[in-house]
Length: 218
Ligand code: SAM
Image 1 (cartoon, rainbow, N blue to C red):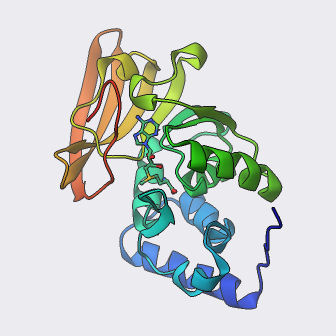
Image 2 (image 1 turned 180 degrees about the vertical axis):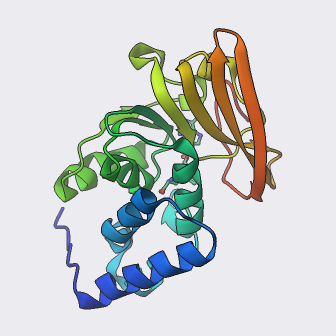
């Protein structure tokens, strides 16, 4: 496959404007804003749609899935409070854009996707861009026990509940960020693991995600 990865002044300028939009919408974390300003989001789009890549909108990536809205990516990332070297499990690789943002913040990322076509694309595109997460194909609703525990877990699809088996894969002090609700809308929810069997749960804003599909999901 021949990739056309050109990042010229037009795309760079559009990315700067996107960062300004994110600031206005309330994203404050300097590291997150820097990462959003660095990762070329248009690389995840067919060239025909490059003019859509820096709008603050979700966009279809094929196979009935979407690349998340930049604001949503920044919002979830900010909630993770990433420190360099954090081990992060990402459930729902999708296009791989969120994965790159996590890696820009210095995380070691384990990312799992259930759709083979998307998995096949990201295992080629991300290394080509210089990003080398650990890729997995399968049902992430059960987490990824073989590489647990994680400092942080991020779920990028809408779940009916936060699976216990996933919560158990956090270190003490670890954070899970997961959209929880019905199939139409979900509340962004964070769980902080305070002790072996004690979690602090915080419900935040409402979003609309594609469904998390699997054993511990829809
Ligand atoms: N953050 C991604 C991005 O920037 O492109 C978008 C993720 S998309 C909104 C949600 C992804 O979760 C889809 O690719 C979907 O196939 C995947 N997904 C849904 N259920 C899953 C599961 N049980 N395990 C792994 N991936 C799942």
